[in-house]
Image (cartoon, rainbow, N blue to C red):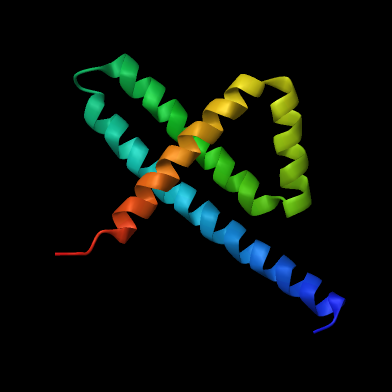
Length: 110
């Protein structure tokens, strides 16, 4: 395999993973909106906060879908310079979510 083929394959794989990630974020956003809808009767302020978080997830999915991998890295770097604490918190939450996903995938189904 020559280097051009390898680069093309890597770009194709990155695009596939971006699409899969964007779809997953959309699914999570829908679930979070559903949870917010259930909260709205008892805790409307909390429901508004949860809806706002779901909207941010939808924005992230759109960003992931629309940007190239290089643009995404630049966007993350810029965000990290502006708000390193939020970037660290987001990475922590993403790591926790990933560990839960891997843990649930590893458990045998009954």
